[in-house]
Image (cartoon, rainbow, N blue to C red; front, top):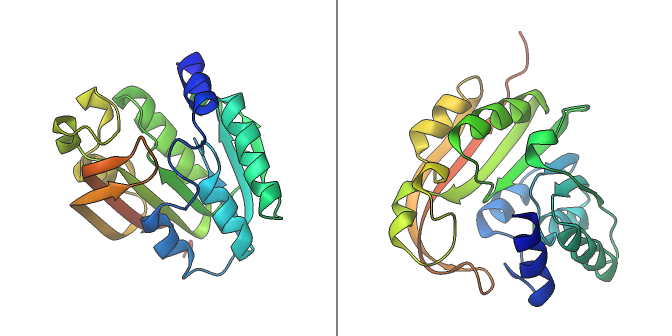
Length: 200
């Protein structure tokens, strides 16, 4: 898979465009900039956008080509992001963040549950989690996402995985996706926004 993604990133100017994901943008725009984690961040469109707002961004992806393109995008926008080459399953929460963005981060169930727990651990008390992903209904569409229904998400799965967080928004929608050549057309999505409560 690493070779697949390296080749895809290397052979296209952008895979998902340079503009940030609209749901991520709508939430990050309303928050006070602080620390942000962006796993599986690809070519850096969301990380760079947040950095331009003043966020201190840590990002990672397992594609070294994606890392190179993300750092180039950051330089072109006169911002700095910290970007590591790292497998999702190898991530360890060595620090906590005020916000975490999971934008189209898809994993099979056994890996998903463990990774989502790491995301809870990586959130500061009062921190927020922003998710946009393909729903299970996306299996019938050609607009992107895994072709394995186990790696597509339901709202119930997200609610269970993040039951310890305070859910602010959880919706399943159908939209016309327009994010570069590989996210294009009718798409079925889940959007999830939650907050880690302060200890009492």
